[in-house]
Image (tube, rainbow over all chains, first blue to last red; front, side):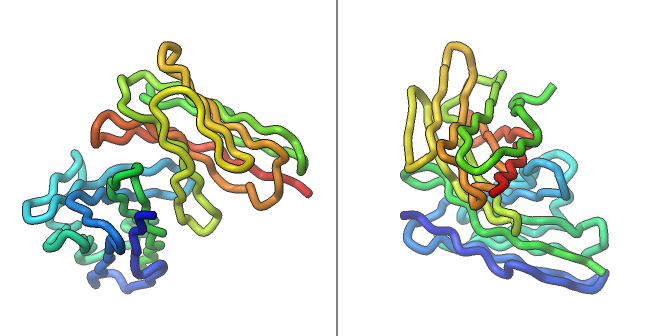
Length: 113
Length: 107
């Protein structure tokens, strides 16, 4: 079945640094990738939608200059958290629509210290 | 009011019990998803359905389009079923997530 590989699974970084999260579709082409964020004990919140070859669409309240999304190929979408701060500590997860529904990456637990 | 409401928020069951988690939605949907989130955070898509009923192993998902309601049933529950179960409604490519049901199955 369709698989989305997400890396890293956990990352700890210092405040002010940038972190890149990758999502790769392994056996299908993902023309669209959804990026979600989940704070503790809260539901998933859509941050942005990336489309291969075009600019990402950001949800209201999500800073596009802080959360850089690149979807340069049909199998890779990346989310870069720039100048990370402790309040960016969260669980980030990607999802891509496939033939049989949506496939989720395994998520990235980001901790900014 | 959330577009997707789930109940209960928390559920504790004895191993072997039959479990039901409910989901009501207020938007017009193209599909309803049931997701399982493991304690480590990873999410697995359990079902995507737009009508009727689907079964996979001990899991059964039903949906009533007229009543805008879906249920997830787990038969013969097991401690490894302990997870957060999330209901999500999609309208095309827009997702609306429920807040999740935290299930703990006690041996």
